[in-house]
Image 1: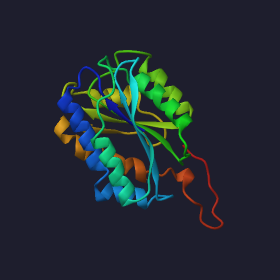
Image 2: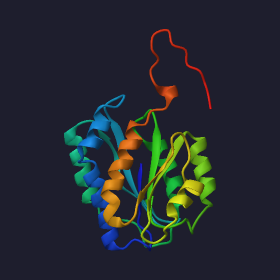
Image 3: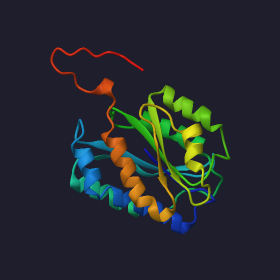
Length: 212
């Protein structure tokens, strides 16, 4: 799930840069290779727009990407999506809660479930962010962040300390909105290609051992 910041701090131009950046990422060869060379050669994607605790809107429903054509179709849908949320404060925690519900309603079942949160500010509305994070992680969901540092130069540290969690969780950084497309492409490649050791197929006769 890709969660797009639409709070007060994001103006119309910055929203367009996020939408176009995600769309462009799904047109890169690196992202397409990561998808098609994965365990199933496919991923399912949905896009959620979010602002305050009272405003989360699905902009692109769950879509299976399993070919160059389906990746391009998804990118067109993302690039053309209108801004749907009401203006409001920054509730990352409510976006995470909405993401948990979206996974419960998903028509597909993936090897991994990831909420990919983009944002340029700290959680200032709704439940405590750590509580939302811990709830998602307890349900087997990984939370990754893309911190846009145009307003809060230490936002990546806040995301690391308060928001991300789960297996292989990480934060990607865009210093400004103009850097967003490249940062999103890097982030998607990392997310799609990451494969926990415990989920790798075993070689004949190999024993899997749990470890920290």
